[in-house]
Each structure stands twice: as structure tokens, then as C-alpha cells.
Length: 418
Ligand code: HAM
Image 1 (cartoon, protein in one colour):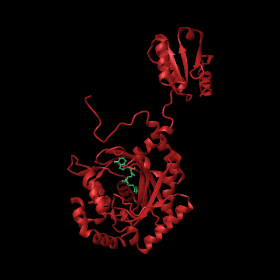
Image 2 (cartoon, rainbow, N blue to C red):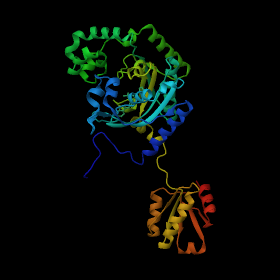
Image 3 (tube, rainbow, N blue to C red):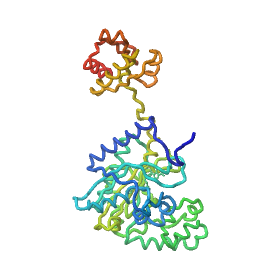
Image 4 (cartoon, rainbow, N blue to C red):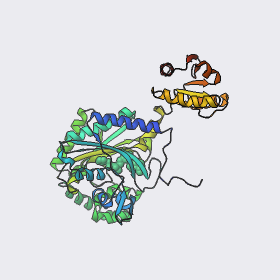
């Protein structure tokens, strides 16, 4: 084979496509009931959009971005996530002038140059949601409940909703100092990246995946113990609301997000069926990001779910292949042309037709009809054309129905048999 997909990228083929479409359709439907509107954002953005928001010392920015110079010498990046692009658009189009909350969703590919492994790709698809302009934890609860509604309707069960608070501008400096004090005499046990991050952004040490770092940071103080009164009240409000909305959740004080823009609420939805890449969705609040991008101070919260992690979990329960309602087998050249016209006319009545457009033996055509799962078969030969009458065979029951070659009549018959 001469050409192959790049490492970490994949083609999505027919047996999986109905599963993807099912997830997308459920998400769109639920977004509609919550008042979210779709936004379509470019895949390519100025690199600075991501470095400023996700953070210079994050793994994504340091190691995983597809960054290159375009022909005009500008540094551009294939988006590794959607929130930064969304906030850029939110500020660029002054969307904050609309009544709050302004609520948006998007679907599309993201790119991270990670080491590929099961459920981890270099191009992967997210469905994301962002809600802007409300600081109250009511919005946090609503968006987590929305995520839960999507996952439930898709048919996912046994998921854990893990929540935490990671504080705000006011309480973070105190936590940062506490963490540095704790880690100071343990630095030798950390990787080079973490030792460098100790001064630049010690919180990132909590997100390092190197096994020695994971064991060396055991016992470090949890950020929840350092929340200011405002953040604590916000977190208590969120927990109360989630109980009220009956969204089961657990508090995970060790939950760390790989992106720097979060404030207060952070959450992750995990499945034990996925091994080490167990987050099917994740998100949080980012009350400082609009400000950072030059807009008026505006709170925001959002999430994104990972399609490649959800599809395998529900694959068995979604109907994946649907054959045509009718397969037309023409016998002879004249019948082939007639089949082409007949199929075209029947389709205008909303029935799914597959016509064999080149004449071949009846046996091979019947075999083909069977292979593609046709519900009914119609044989069109010279005799049938002359008499103006055909026989429709139901492939499941074997029953045969004689009917005139009349478009209305045929369409009605096929629809009845659906
Ligand atoms: P994230 O946690 O980086 O958050 O990604 C969200 C989800 O995308 C993950 O939980 C996972 O399901 C999926 N995902 C991430 N990386 C990969 C990968 N390499 N292969 C397959 N799936 C992956 C964000 O992206 C934030 N923008 C979410 C957000 C929206 N926060 C606020 N608003």
C-alpha cells in the first residue's frame, strides 16, 4: 500500500458513521432544548490564541501543538481545543452585547501531537459547549446537567462525574505558595520539565504524567483546602444544585486540568471501560479568559466531550447498517435504463432505492441485494416492462406481491413494508 493515514489519525468508515451521527443528533437535539446555538469556528488560528489561554507551560502548548509558519510568515496552529477559538470569536464579534447567558456549541476536529494509544489520537473530534455571562453556580449546574442529559440519552451508563474547584485569582497565589513549600525539598524526584515548572507554574506539576512525578507529588496539599470564601461558596452552591438536579457526582480534590484558563469549577466525566484514557468529557469555568482576550470581564463555563472515546462505548447498541427499502434488479439493457428512471421517481417519495445500473445475471443481483441488506427486491425484465407489472419480493418473509408499474402504488407498497 503506497499511502496511509498519518500516525494517530484515522478514517471513520461506514459501520461507525451511524454511531457518530446518532451522538451528534442527540447532542443537537438536547442543545436546542437548553437554548444553545451552533457556532462554526476555523480549524486554524494564530498560535498566540492558544499560548495565551491554554498556558505556556502546559503540555499542550509545550509539546503537542501542530504549529507552523504559513506562506505569509505568520505562526499558525491547528486548534488543539475549541475554547480558545470560541473566546476569540466571542470577543471579535462582540457577542457579549447579547443578553446573558449566551450559549453556544460546536462540533469538529482538534489536533494534538500526543503519543497515540488506544482512545488517544492526534486528530480527534469534540462536541463542545460554552455558556457566557453568568457567574452564579446555577449556570455550572445547568451545563453539567446538560452534559449528563446528552450522555444519558446516547445510552452511556456507569459514568463518574468528578467535580472540584481550583480557585480563582484571589486564592491561587496562597495555594501556589503552599504547593511550592511542600515540593521544595522533593524536587530531585521530578522530571526536568517539572523542575522548570516549579518556578514558572508549579500547579502544572500536578498534571505531569511521568510516573516518578506522580509518586513524588503524592501527599501534596489539595487546592480545595485553600479556597477563598467566594470560591468555597461557589463550590457549595454547585454541589447543592447538582443534588437538586439529581446529577450524581463525586468530589475529586486531585482533579487537575491540563489547561491554564480554568477558575473555580472544574469537572471530568470518566468511564472505567476505557483504561488509562478514561475521560469521556471534561470542562470547567474560565472567568478571566474574555478579559485576557481584550473583551469586557465576562465569566464563562464549558465542556467538551471526546467522540472517539464515546463511540466504542455505545457501538453495540446503535443500529449501524440499514439496507435500501428496495433493490431493483434489471435484466437486459432496456431494463437497466428503465430501472434508472424508476429509482429516480421512487426516491422523490422518500423511499431508499438501490438500482443495479448494469445488467448482470439474476443470481448475482439477488446475492448483491442480500449482501447489502435490501428489504425488498423487484425484478425488472422485458416481460415485466411489456406487461407493465412487477413482483416485489419481501426479503425477510419471502412473500411476493404483484403490482402495476405505477410510481404512487409502488411507493405506497414499499412504505407499508418498511
Ligand atoms: P480537554 O480535557 O483537553 O478539554 O478535552 C476534552 C475531551 O476531549 C477529553 O475529556 C477527551 O474525551 C477528549 N480528548 C482530548 N484529547 C484527546 C485525544 N488526544 N484523543 C481523543 N480524545 C481526546 C478541552 O478541550 C476543553 N476545551 C474543554 C472545555 C470547554 N472547557 C471549557 N470549555
